[in-house]
Length: 212
Length: 259
Image (tube, rainbow over all chains, first blue to last red; front, side, top):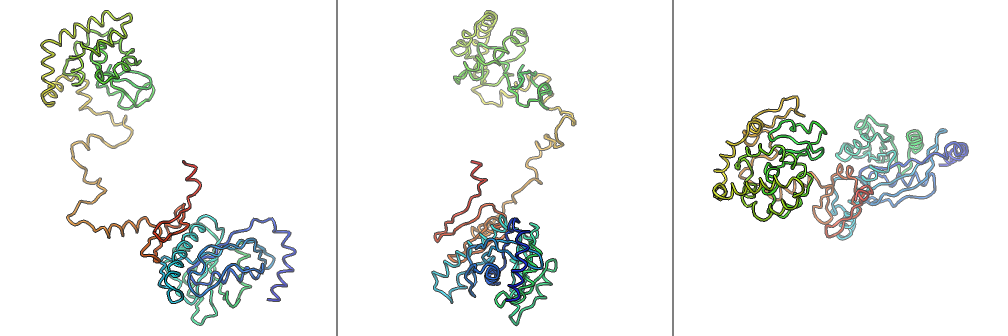
């Protein structure tokens, strides 16, 4: 990250004055549960502000409330963008507490399930009301063509929101970025591993370009 | 002058087709029917004579307007046969010589009283004796019987208006009202399907409704099905679900302003 941080500092001094009055764009990080949205949000926030956004977990629906990190300034190749990152709960059409009973007792699983459902409602509400752009995170080790992904990307397109598709978890063996590119050829797909920090330069380039 | 535009008070003869496309003067489309009886027997046959609003009616401008007409065309009113009036009117006129009508005559007996009261009384004399009895028995019998003479007694305009057609260009829209009258229930306008012997179970109906309307379906505690499109489309959103199946929603400001 050393090179990257140095770059950031040198550019930010110039671009600060040029773009500081820009209204921050609110970028929603959307995607199905366990795609790595919070891991990505944390990485972005840590890289540019030093703070994390939320707790990460391998259990689905760890994020059950939309969380926002405001005023995250990202600069790349002379382009700068100040964004508010909204990490949203994973969107799904079914929530079942039995998914979590291995990890916790039944009451907690039921509560988690209920909160996750509220979280989906909230995420959908944000999408409707409060988002200027979308980062759609997919687990590249999973089949991207699901009802949820198709519907959400359809909604995002219908609103003409700028959208970037992030093919996350490229560090996994089963990962296939091409599968995602083929599924959504109309959008720019960026491969990355939020967990490992792989290909983050390209991630920030794209964010600065798309949402700047 | 039975029909009167409630807006500009222009009157139309009974059966007039002029008013079918709105009042030609002011475009108003609300008309009141001023019964012949109300005009002719200002003393007697107010249709609501028995309902206590008779005096109100008597004081209304309609009534006052009708009076000069009734004077002018006084002779004409003998042409309105008893049977051409609504039964209540008739009954009213027979009993009119009694209390309520009498009162109202006294009430507006201003300058034109003599002729009217004169007519009123003579009328009462005429009808209260033999014809009065006749009408009363007629009313006590069933209506169909009285309907017949009434139809016969329709004047030409009235009859024409019932069977006649308004020229097509005067109609606001193509739909043809007479078409629907005698065909019985239209076969193509049904929304509901024909009732079949089998009724869908409550379960199925609920299923169907859930599919259509619910944004979050609670299958069991801790198990939910979500309709993403609904969640996205709705202005209000569910803030919290509670164990007992209740939930809290966020109501958009625009709703509150509407109240």
